[in-house]
Amino acid sequence: MATEEYPVRCEISVPFPTNQMAEIALNSLSPDPEPRNSLVTKEFILDDNILKLNQMAISIHRKLIAIIGDEDTCTGFLLGGTGELNAAKQANFFTVTKDTSTKDIEDKFKLFTTRNDIAILLITQTIAEEIRYLLDNHTMSIPAILEIPSKDHPYDPSKDSILKRARGMFNAEDFR
Amino acid sequence: MVTLGSDTTLESIDRLTLDYLAILEEIAVSKQQLESVLHEGFQNLSHTRLVLGQTAISPLSYNNVMEPTALITYEKVDDSISFDLEIGHGNKIVSESNNETKNSKQSQSSKTSSASDPIRWFAALPPHSLRSARSNFQKSLVVITHLATLQSRAESFRKQIHFPSTQ
Image 1 (tube, one colour):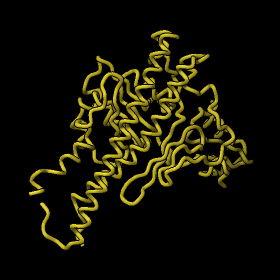
Image 2 (tube, helix red, strand yellow):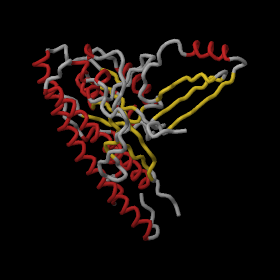
Image 3 (tube, chains in turn purple, blue):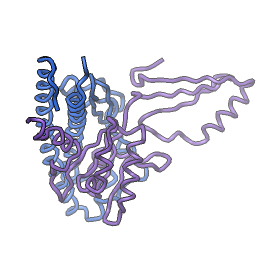
Image 4 (tube, helix red, strand yellow):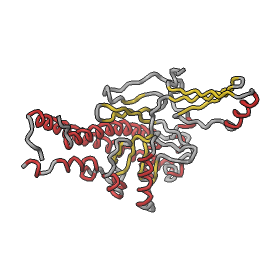
């Protein structure tokens, strides 16, 4: 029963012995207003003794753009609308300052590349240099990793992992 | 090392190599584009700081609830992945498969409600430079989505050249 606005819907109906019990279940499951989530909307409907849950989404596969960058880079992209801070206080961006340790950056990289709701990971090239080996070993197609220039350092193509692989392809030996 | 095979195998490797190099060139051009639009965005952020102050444009101003308005959808196309960008609700900005800009059907709330528009975190009345910065970064997202698709295609060519399927 998809509508035009929400082409993806899932309806779960749970029958209870009495209307009163269904109402108790409804009140236990949704005591507070549902926090607005742009990806999936949830609503409960009480129909006599049946409790229905409707979950609606615009698309199953809308994913996030994550960022690992300095303050200005994160601020800029958040201004552009990429930022998500969900109910569990998990963010899809990580601000790196001069006090951030390489281990923290590594952990965030691993976290963002294993989350299943991130399609693209942006990382400033200077930070990418610190965890270069992790980027070189990342072969999964999702999330796509993009190295971006930072405010202070212009983009250097000789350091980019993707282009480095290309250079590794064409060895002088091959043409002998 | 290329072992002597049939002409068609060598031809297909040649073709793949040319395609690969062409894609790499497109990537280089897009990265230049990205750099210049980001540079403009950072400049606009700096101008905004002159107007609103140093702390206004910093992580101190971030909201503690954030909803993304820029989202990515992707699909598998041949051996690579094609990425699409959606800004707002249900308005497609870039469609890689057709290589043209198209607007899908507008949803009822096509404009981001002011409560969730990130520009409001920084200023109730955003100065012109802040609006320009926002549009720079939104434009950079279009380039980034295109780059992600190009990168995926480049990787697929590279793998095909490196590990050609035996026939």
